[in-house]
Length: 84
Image 1 (cartoon, rainbow, N blue to C red):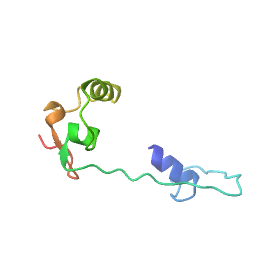
Image 2: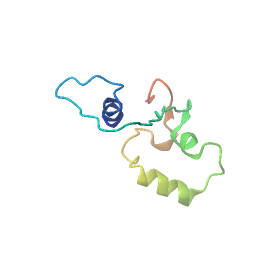
Image 3: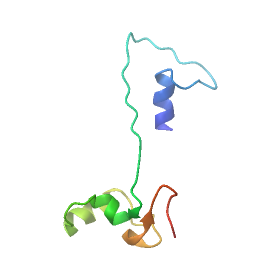
């Protein structure tokens, strides 16, 4: 949704309905490519850093991950998605 909107505003994605009126002389846009390691949720969050339970708990909660994974933070993730 958000990426498609930005791409359409930049003229990189065709508009399927309506029109976009662009009134700017120049535009800069850097696409953010998402990626994830073939590893557990915890390993993807701490990314090789030392484990700090307080910080980790705050991050896990702030990202709303409590209900997302059937095996908690030991769930294995990868380029093929969640592996239950």
